[in-house]
Length: 226
Image 1 (tube, one colour):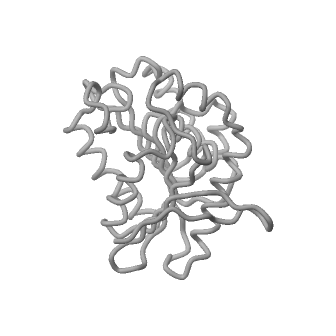
Image 2: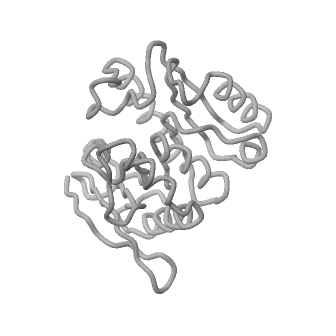
């Protein structure tokens, strides 16, 4: 596989930075992946590389445009300063860019995100027809009105011990998707905390849940993008 930082177009006269990872075959199914509140850090690039090794064409837009954080207070400030409307526009443009690549076939695009990025993935899919599959890792669930607009097949992955996203919210989201008739599966891992997939955070990393969630993710993306 190959990977590099690059610029992709936003509309006709603007560009934004992103990390592009290509599979060994040079072509494959397309996925946009969305950062946690830390920014486009090594962990997100590593996940992009892992997806590329599995045969996906992956674009990870840098929503902070070069900034990143290593401490929660810094990350919180960056996340609070993020213009969500601009972020959604850039995420949607990232999907359109991938769809236009000759290396992407068929012309479908998935979206996947973690924490802040998971919530943005849900919002982007609910407000745009640009996506054909969603995988949300412990992103805050959409409220009822937005959940009703989400028609994209959605895999939601959560941790039982996530104190920021109580199971009542996850269950309510599941119910709204069921009511809307949206293809979906919500899976909660017993004993897993928020950010359990992030192997750069040993205090919360849950290897068994992460391994299972990874296989569920690959299966979901292949099911709806192939």
